[in-house]
Length: 157
Image 1 (tube, rainbow, N blue to C red):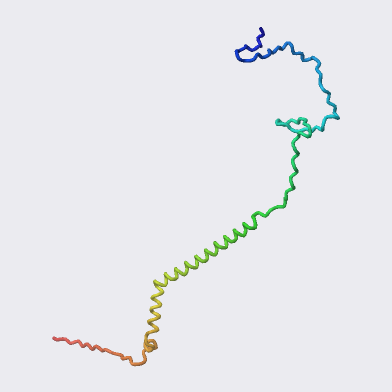
Image 2: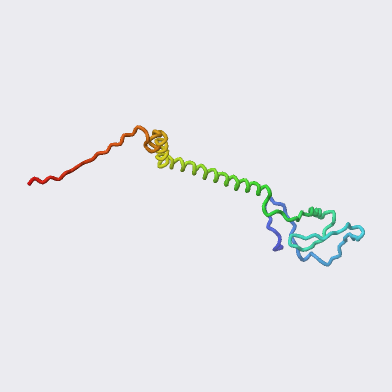
């Protein structure tokens, strides 16, 4: 029995055994001849490993479409719209800072008025309400009182 033949098992069909001695690689075989005129055009395409292999043109993948040329004109450093937004933000910030500074000055002035400035306002109001004669030098019905004290020394002795 051949060592290469599989063991027959019940229920399985028998398979022909492999006989390497019967193979004759040099035996002439009948093959069809292909003429160059009968064959279609062949193109060379890269395979998965980067090698170029021949392939019938009708089986080759479609060629890649040429991309449109890009516009290579230099662009501004900052987008004009971004420049406008940034300018509005800086201008708005400066406006808010100015308004805040002005409000702070007004409030500090109001706080100063409540302290020393109201005293001066009260002095001015009292001066305006005082009689005009008292301010003008005392001419009018003013009484001058002179008090003289005479002291004499007496010695009892």
